[in-house]
Length: 335
Ligand SMILES: *[C@@H]1O[C@H](CO)[C@@H](O)[C@H](O)[C@H]1NC(C)=O
Ligand SMILES: *[C@@H]1O[C@H](CO)[C@@H](O)[C@H](O)[C@H]1NC(C)=O
Ligand SMILES: *[C@@H]1O[C@H](CO)[C@@H](O)[C@H](O)[C@H]1NC(C)=O
Ligand SMILES: *[C@@H]1O[C@H](CO)[C@@H](O)[C@H](O)[C@H]1NC(C)=O
Ligand SMILES: *[C@@H]1O[C@H](CO)[C@@H](O)[C@H](O)[C@H]1NC(C)=O
Ligand SMILES: *[C@@H]1O[C@H](CO)[C@@H](O)[C@H](O)[C@H]1NC(C)=O
Image 1 (cartoon, helix red, strand yellow):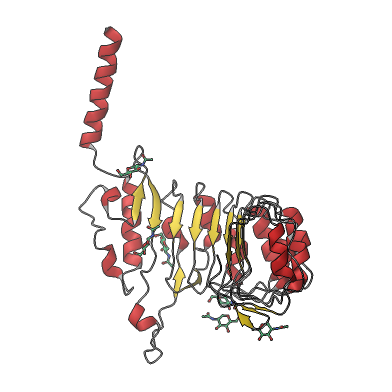
Image 2 (cartoon, rainbow, N blue to C red; image 1 turned 90 degrees about the vertical axis):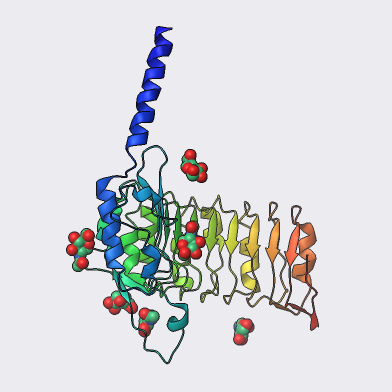
């Protein structure tokens, strides 16, 4: 009875505390206000108007801020599409020069941050002394970092290697080339030991970085579509090191039939996208016992060896081959 009473009193006390404290951490609230000020010249600044210094609970400042329900610490920040104007950004007649150098120190108050979205903000790099390097040592919980649709180049790659807790990294549609090459990528791979999802799509990467990608040994999903890969040396090395890979997206590159034998090494693959490359169908695809979905759209098949080999893939459920030609004839919408 006495114990029950104690439990009841404790619960009441907690409820009281909860009820009284509609607030988030003071440092995080002022940190958010600094971020707001930093974006004050951005075309979509108005989207931060919920961020109000008079509201003590910054966890209620709209969908761009998410807190942990029990600790009230900020765990997710969505700062996507702020320095972005759909009408102006693509209008070549307006000289819209609004490149931003990221002041990464702005994020240092958010020690519990797990997810940071910075998509489509015309970010070109990090400020001197306030770039990602310092940030990585501050954000020890970060799991998801999305920098897609910006103007970052190779110069930031090595500084990303400090984010050792990162599980998903999205670098799609930036200005990376990988010409700083092996070094930068090897450092990245050896730093990001927990990375499961890596998206490098639609940059200017080429075969130079292929061998260093094998350092990301925990990867489940790799997207290198829309680059200049040809795969002349094959993907054997990659296949033998990425033993957990389930999704591989190679579309819109210049891969040709020569890489098909090495693909059979990716024995854990469930999803493979080969569309929009230079496959002609002269070599078959074998060994992918778990493959369920295969994309072969926008290809020009001269021979049917590849297609016939697909009958030997025991788990294949979905084959997509629209916009593909087969010995000169158009394929239907394949399923
Ligand atoms: C936190 O609360 C939100 C909104 O009430 C809810 O959607 C979410 O599932 C909760 N998260 C956890 C981890 O309890
Ligand atoms: C982040 O914000 C953008 C812009 O409003 C929105 O389109 C996107 O869905 C949001 N992302 C998440 C994961 O909430
Ligand atoms: C970057 O942000 C930090 C933290 O808000 C601030 O102290 C510093 O002055 C800023 N640096 C620049 C160059 O704006
Ligand atoms: C990368 O971007 C930074 C910042 O805009 C610039 O100073 C540097 O010259 C660029 N480097 C390359 C290789 O393009
Ligand atoms: C991308 O990098 C190239 C050099 O590699 C440079 O000439 C070009 O201006 C950059 N583009 C942007 C949008 O920064
Ligand atoms: C690869 O395909 C592109 C267009 O899809 C074509 O322009 C190019 O000539 C092809 N290259 C080879 C080596 O077949």
